[in-house]
Length: 283
Image (cartoon, rainbow, N blue to C red):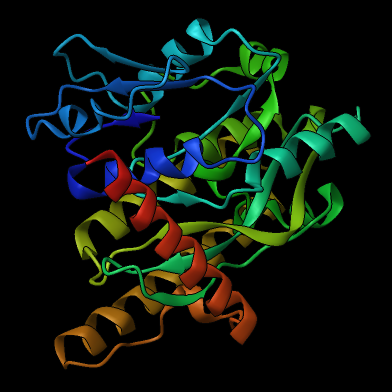
């Protein structure tokens, strides 16, 4: 879990790992030169499985992930972001999938998107099998980066490009490796992925432009045309969202394409409440 100015979200993110249904894990928290002191806020979560590393430098996500790959002592490597929440059964489900299917290198889990106030706003797009995940690579790979869980040898063989491309570290690695790898996703929602309430237009355009550049390096002419068409469509949708945002509307939220069932909302509320209760016990 590389962190940078994680603020109030870091504590529940770490507690969500403490609440996993499997106990044989280590959590490597690498502070990438934060100035907000958020890492100090988890100092009371005393657990020998948690390692907090700080060197005062700001190296970027990709460099920190490669450091974690080198430091990790397990047979598997899992990702987690500083402001998201892993459901209690997340790691157990992914471990079981990899143990049952030795051909799978990397698996993700389905996600519920939550806002800054922990309210569910939609379910993220997903695909379950390698064939479905890679059927249209010009659209990107629906493998949410914070949910990755894979074999250590896969991560050490491919590693992250460093310095990482602008907010595209995950897609770059997948583009480079998908033809010689096997991916999958668990069928149930096991993760809460935090999204921002407002679109940062400049960041969105730069990220999409970076991804298109990466795709054009890996694709033939036909796939390149498809990728360019997707780029234009997504820029147009971002513009519509930004306009709606400025007019005071919620816009066309990209994470609401898959409706959330009532039982999933209730499940998330139970998990959120349990996190809060656990956090208070450490205070």
